[in-house]
Length: 246
Image 1 (tube, helix red, strand yellow):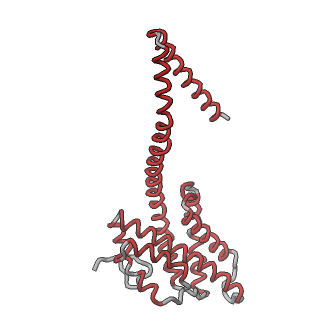
Image 2: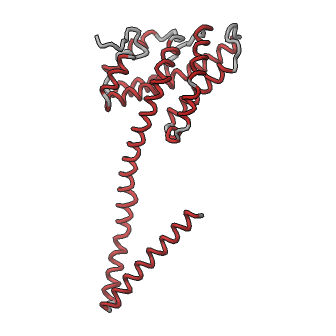
Image 3: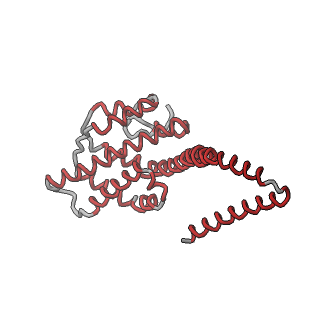
């Protein structure tokens, strides 16, 4: 109601100011015909003015604001991969038993053109990684996600992340997996049904995480080559990757 009242008062003030200026013009020049011609000429230009201001200019400002917001979001996403994402990718990839050619393709990401990122993301849902559960690795993953819970909760406090659908879905999937693991006191001797359920949760996180990682890597390659160089040298899909430059 306060916002509506503010807008109403502003509208009334502008109308009053316009009427005042027309009144001053009439008082000084006494030329009603000219005032009417000027009024209708300005009224005829009003739709064009609305087109320019509300559609074209606002659209350009919106694009600029969206780019600025995405740049800030990518900083937050970069923090996520530095703190959680890289290690989580390594951990989940250790469960995967296939396809064999996947790692050989993605470890050469530094040689991909922009079209390569798009085509790989498009084909990603078709990959079946057949994640095989191992008790020791599950216990490590349970402990790892529990340690990172506070960091992940702080990410959710960023309202801008809620506008990034893909990353929001990834965070929800990671939280769900963390909760599934945390609520199981015993990860050994899981029933076949429980193993299948957890394998599906792992697969969901793995696919979403790879997609977000590919988007982030493409962003670094196009805008921050020095950060991309470090990301390539710590590629979680390249067993021979080393941070030291050979």
